[in-house]
Amino acid sequence: MKTTQIFIITVAISLNSLFAQDNKEGEFPTLEGPYLGQKPPGSTAEVFAPGIVSTELYELFSAFTPDMKEFYFVRYDEDDKPSMIVYQYQNNQWIKSITGPRVGEPFISPDGKIMHLGRRYMERTDTGWSTIKTLDAPFKDFSIMRLTASFRGTYFFDTAGEEPIRYSLLTDDKRGEPKTLNIDLGKHNAHPFIAPDESYLIWDDQREEGYGKADIYISFKKEDGTWGPSINLGDKINSERGDSYATITPDGKYMLFNRSIDENNVDIYWVDASFIETLRPQ
Image: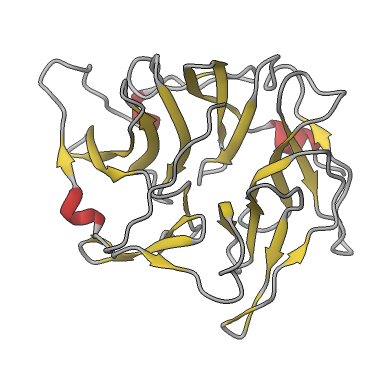
């Protein structure tokens, strides 16, 4: 996967002021129903919204709001310029808008109040999203790529150029010092997704016994708070290419993730998330 550029915004800009609907009549079919009107996949991963979301360009990340009425992702155009795009469910159909330049790897908190963008974030307001803010101590010295959060407010995140996945507890509204997660990891671990109830963690990893350049793994939390073994999600999900950036839809039904098709194309895939209960220790 190519090295992607993170835009540094020196003057905070509200995404609300950047919403610019760019749908053209007839450009796409009318999208109605859940999941952008797409037929849900089975246990084998399929391309998500081909020709609509997934194209011959680079499409990265996946973030539905808890009400499943907004879907965010990032696309690189022919000039290698990244933009964050949103589809919003309005008047019984999905409307596409460009929200502005890429400013991080979007993850929306389980309560829908915060859009995390690595070390930056925005808060939901009555009119949309706030200006971009930055996490301060104890995160200011971490080069965070992806940060996800549980219902209780625990952060799980990776750091560019380092291997551990870290977590930070929220206790009495005070953020704890990040700690390295004690989990069975491989040589390159990135892009964690924590279950809202913290019962499992999904991330991508590179291991000699894997299927491709990067595979997606899951680990379940035990009753004593420790983590179980890393489980490869298998060849119905992982491929000989690079598979990464997994996220579970807020309704718990599907997993979306990135697959590197070639050096010029990354698509968003999805798969039925029932594998979670199949793999969960009894």
